[in-house]
Length: 146
View: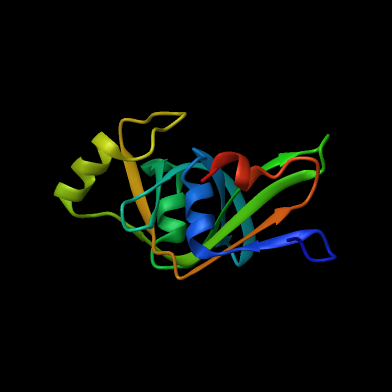
């Protein structure tokens, strides 16, 4: 049941299931002491960590390595006034282990703008929150009927 504000808070597992359905989201980080938001391709690793792939020359990997960041993805239906949004907050680290880098080149997120030198960033999910907006359609239930 939805509370009177129309939003249903989702538990961690529901958030991760929804996040796993999306190939693109946004990363929120600090750049030059100011908030920055960029679209990113991502996928979830088996342990729930968010894996990002970016051109090494883009500067994103350097900017987020060792920093706390947020990764957000959503699916919204403006006509039905419904949708969901999930936010993962955690420490970002650039993958430097050669074996892990090779694994992610095979299985990690696909880049929409491939580069000859790519970096992988792993975001450990310390805080996972999500909300679903009540409307004509209930996206979480539509994706995951029992």
